[in-house]
Image (cartoon, rainbow, N blue to C red):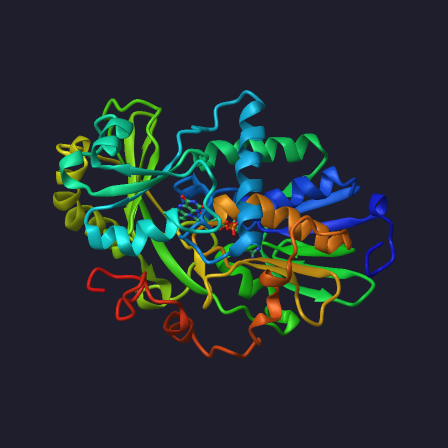
Length: 421
Ligand SMILES: Cc1cc2nc3c(=O)[nH]c(=O)nc-3n(C[C@H](O)[C@H](O)[C@H](O)COP(=O)(O)OP(=O)(O)OC[C@H]3O[C@@H](n4cnc5c(N)ncnc54)[C@H](O)[C@@H]3O)c2cc1C
């Protein structure tokens, strides 16, 4: 039974935001037997940050993101979720090729690879690769003479986020979910026995709501008197022309370069935190729901990184920019995810604080959001993700959130974003 006393079959739950988190919430609500599920999106589902995601999914609790056992369970849920989506038989770019966390130097190994290998969350199958083994596994994408060693997790996968969202939104429609696209939520009110959602196209009445509006979550929940400590960051994804690469190459991350890079349909997709920028430091301190289009940041990424990268990744030599996309992941002061009831509101759950890992954690966060709004037993203990771990007024600005974030790796002087760090 929910706080407002309806049984599941008669409830109407509204989901605000049709990214991976909101769509996962919707599909789980429908599978739980909720009669009416409305997904309200200001644009098109999957067309904001999710559509720009690079699609790396792995056990990040092992030495990468401080999310502990509960995070690990969400990661495993994400891996299983995309495998099942792939098994539908429609191409979602699912490649179960593993994840490589690579070091260029002995120092890099100590700082970034050892914590992965030695993590209590490292699966038993995690492997410690030397440079020659990296070269073999990467099939020409990496020059082994330029690298030191890596932790290889064979359970890691990659997906194409846009293709995966097409299949997921199709499943939601088949289950009876209703999309209201191009409809912007302007306020939510929780009267205790019902939730009223104001939009630019009229009012929606529901028994409960899930706010999964990504970088716009604070705007959506502001009327409920609560704010999350979110640092919104513009992140760029570059895709080269077809380099003829095989589809069996693992994804790779190199924290010394703050780089992520993978094969995608024969091409290379890559990005680096050295050219991510907090939104408040860009010319647009606000942004409409959707994707940013900051050409300057894209050009800076491409022009400043390529020379260094092509020495390590030979297929980048002579590569051309085929496409690019940007999204706005939201970082939190403890790098922790957020899902739970908005304090003071019994019928509204908010899910977000993705820390640029929402493709991985979104399936599990969406399931948790659905369970919490329905008053069901959560499949993962939700306490570490709770909304009220920071007071609503704990941070006065996004600059304060940024200052409170953990330093990058073990180097405490290094800040998180920007090349000079
Ligand atoms: C370049 C890049 C690479 C990334 N790589 C990875 C990766 O490899 N692995 C990984 O796990 N994660 C990755 N991420 C992070 C991941 O993409 C995000 O964490 C995830 O997509 C966030 O999903 P979301 O559902 O919270 O947000 P979104 O996808 O942004 O969805 C929110 C939705 O809410 C809607 N909305 C906003 N405001 C309103 C409103 N007022 N009314 C109605 N609707 C509204 C928007 O239109 C949008 O569709 C990457 C992100 C980027 C940008």
